Image 1 (cartoon, rainbow, N blue to C red):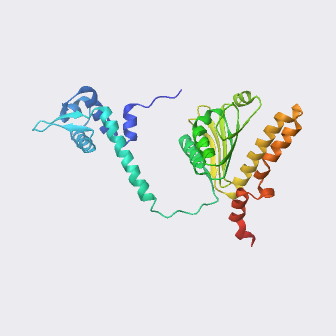
Image 2 (cartoon, one colour):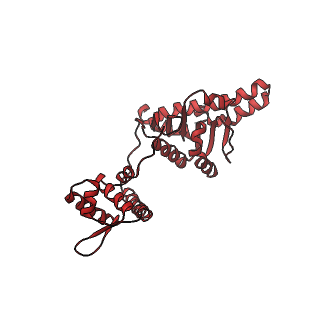
Image 3 (cartoon, rainbow, N blue to C red):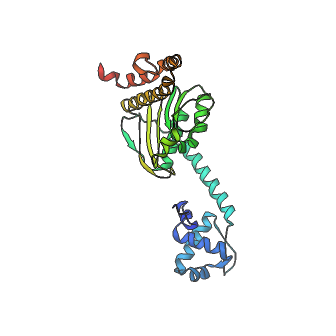
Length: 287
């Protein structure tokens, strides 16, 4: 069972110290008090509480009255959230501007392990958003919510998008291959899988907990070899899934159409954009 984080824990995550979060929450719930009264109430050293109040005032989370015996009052929590959100957005804008001036590093051939579920999601969405030519993917139901709109947008800008799914879904412009008895297949395991390849330039393979909040195993890479291997696996998996649906019905004409419509995706026979990436990456080693 997942436990909801407490208010003081979240305040610490956004930059408050433990003492600052205790002081703020006390003032928020108990109203205006002197620093001395706050220290006595929460059982902390008076000098430390005064320092925490001063830092909170600098952050805009606490206001102090004028006069000798200063009363302290917490900024209402809705105002605090608005203020912190505005500061965060401003900092991110400044960071974006600063980072865009840095030189881009060259893509490497390493395989990287991802241990954070949010990072898996962000990586998958980024790959889809940056794709220019072709996206192949195996998408189990619980991660479809992440990718539905990004895949739709990719198809709308001209990217060829083909995905294997386990529950019926319609995405404009996306070629969706539905696995027979997909729900039963998906329900056999207590995990969620996502395999994604974009342009034959990068790949993501992830296995998540059933609620998608925890990573069991996840890897990403821009290795041309690793990416090509996953691309081929997904391509043949997509084609085979479609053929397994139509051949037992004796629909040979439709089977031939499926093969014809995917001819251009085969890397070495058609020399497509995926082939170009693979060939260019290792060309200098062959010369």
